[in-house]
Length: 75
Image 1 (spheres, rainbow, N blue to C red):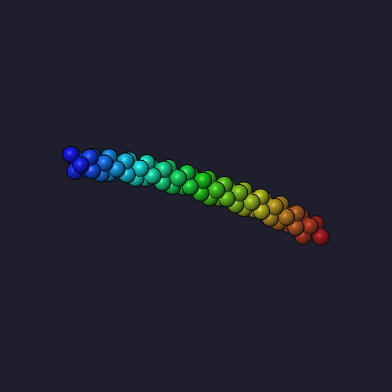
Image 2: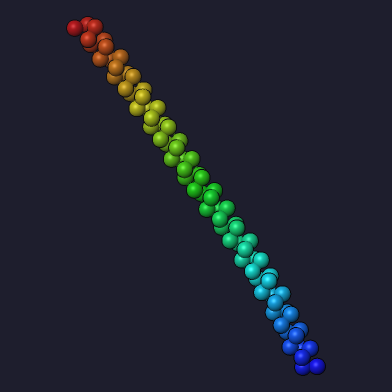
């Protein structure tokens, strides 16, 4: 009888620990997904900002070149 109680307790503990490990695994996966999402968002935003800056610099340089050409032509 005593062995049966001990075996039952061990079985319940094992099931409890298996469930806990499964829950921790799911939480870990969810955290990794959230990190990936936030990193991709930050990288995407940085790329967008960089592309916008590059476009503005190109336009500014183009306008400056046009302005300088006019000055050279009229001098």
